[in-house]
Image (tube, rainbow, N blue to C red; front, side):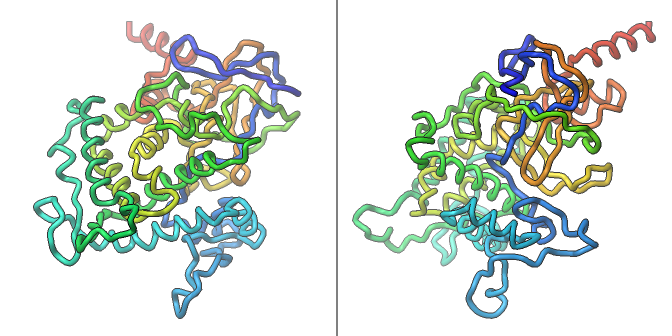
Length: 430
């Protein structure tokens, strides 16, 4: 079967996936093989396979997985898992190593964990600037206004803040002089991290930057468009309404046939940039995130000076693009089979999967097997009908559903079911 849907503008804004022909119930309309960027929470790393995300507790009650790549060295250091990566078996470890053929991801994750452990021990100085002490510590307080409120945030303010942050990053963490001379006696300051979630965010951003780096260095036959090598845009681009971060119930659907969808963008940097950026919406819902994003950016810039990723890291537009599209476009990585008590192990962005918009009466259900998301029809679909998933529990009342969607994805749902529920509610109160 060929492509069964196409991406095109919706009547309510953004873009969505629309059936190009009738589709039987139980059809796999799309398979998204791997996330462009993802992270497994630090607290779950020993319990969740780094490749297939299988949970050790579901394997006979095991507490941790035992397969890893040893760090080498002596004593406890020798037995530590390199890159903080644990696997459910040798097969998954081999798959990871094959995917990370150049060793870049494992090297980067190892550096983030090592330097992150140090960074969590430091506190920013009271004057918010590096001192002349033996161990300088860089604070971000000089960049973000005190008591920043949602109503204070504008694109102009954000652009101004990031410009100042970039100037500081290039001053302290720019490439060494071409002559090879040192920077004198001045040491690069430490960028402190608040907690382990900052390390999770750093690994998430780094995973996206690794994808960009590899996209830029593909063989000519598979190289992405030339726009990959350019600075990513900070302005909005036409794209879809945000995709879901919560799982669907998806345990018993028959698989009738498999459809290859060619209408969605590939998991490339241009494809990632085509997703809806949600910087202002995300930061206005939680202004404290701005300080966290800046801290993660400066931390990565500080620990990868001279590294192949450093040019991408030093340009904040890449980090901003990843954070801005993570917000509202991510899928949760959940314990399977999904139940109300399932754990969420982390999250990721599956680019081409983010074009399935929300409906409180979805006609698609998503299923995860390892790293792969598949999307199946729950009923027969007519040509021209939009293909939709649900963003969380659709069994709640209309007020609860719409509030959750506004709080989490910044839109008031106007699907047919919500319109009918609102109309009935209005009639009942008349």
